[in-house]
Structure formats: C-alpha cells, structure tokens
Image (cartoon, rainbow, N blue to C red; front, top):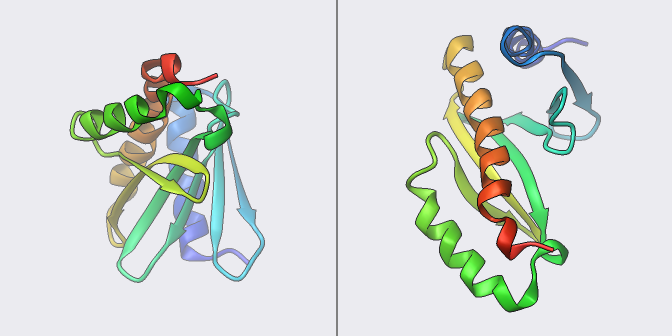
Length: 137
C-alpha cells in the first residue's frame, strides 16, 4: 500500500534523478515506515528516510567504529564537532557503532525542500568521507 510519505519520496527521487542520475527508492519492511533512497554512483551511501511526529528524518550512515583508526579517534571526534556547523542542512551523529550524517525538516515541508535536503545530505556524506579519510582505515 502506498502512503503519502511513499508518494513524496518517489517524487523526490524522480527530481533527484534529473540532477544526479538514477535513483532507487525502496520501502523497508518493519513497524516504522522507513525508505531507503540509493543514488547511482553513491550506492555505499544510501539515505534512510522516516517520518516522526513533527519531522521527516533523513539519515546517511558514513562509517562504523571499526573503520576508525584507533589512534586517530579523538581527532576524528574533534574534527566532526568542528565541521558540524560548516555542513549545510546536515549534522554528524552516531547510533550504536555507526557514524552518520542526518538532516531533518518539517513534515509539511514541500517536495522541493525535501529534494534540497536529500541532495545536500548526499553531497555532504561524500564530502565527509573525503574530509575524514585520514582518520579512517
């Protein structure tokens, strides 16, 4: 069954595809409605989208604790804090042993706003991997 969120994500995916190339959207089964948006050429950085009470949450996992060189961990954490302000529409976070970038916008935000947030999050994830390469294995 297609929900309003699913329709919005499909539309956003089509608009992103016009800019970035092929985009695949997939609903992940579970108790909470979550969608995975995968951009061709960036398959290792899918974006997960869900709706909370008042926000759409967009999350991109960028690396795991195992990927961090132990001797650079503190420097990585400081660099993430320093970069957080400079990354438009995204913030660093961590869930368990997974580091991520995330963005949030109001549930009633328009499709253009959602597309802008998804595009920024995807670009920021690519940039974050490049910026943090010295700290990762």
